[in-house]
Length: 246
Image 1: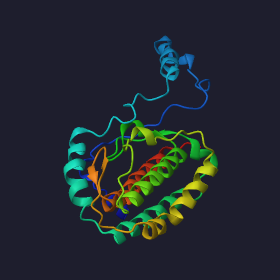
Image 2: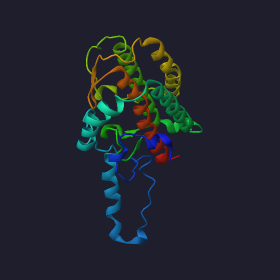
Image 3: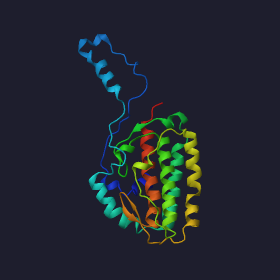
Image 4: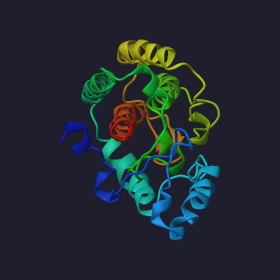
């Protein structure tokens, strides 16, 4: 098992099993042999009903985490694990996880980057985020990385960011071409650590900004979240790859 999956702080509460993929492809390719008798006449009808709504029914964006995981995140992960992390080690782990993401992208047919796969419930992953493609996952990482960079730079310079953090506001559109998403992600993560090292004047700043799951956090706690968040979606990308067809 990969090191990053061992160290995901949510994994102790992650007992979900199973895997499923949303229906896709032509709905006219099934053959129902008449030799089976009239007892199977209902199969085409059931298949038609199921294919009428291939989208899985998931919780709405921003619904949050299951109760026990939410409690763990709010009272253990944020105030203890993140607060006691090391800035340099966080940056190193962020770089390592991004390199693993790039390795997962190697050799994938570009067309498959847009294929959405329903992954199993996963610790740290909202229910609404389980039916994404690899391209959507990378788009989400770009959105969140940029937002967290702004927060960390502000907090690290004694400034409280305006507004509030929202998990519902950082979902991907799924409308950006995969090649552009990969290019943007690569450019972003190649400079993010250096931008923070250069831009943050006080890594121990006590100014706080609230995260919806972890509560009020300092610049260092938000910086810890960069690799923790990337690790969650590395695991998701691997799950998506296992369900790709084609």
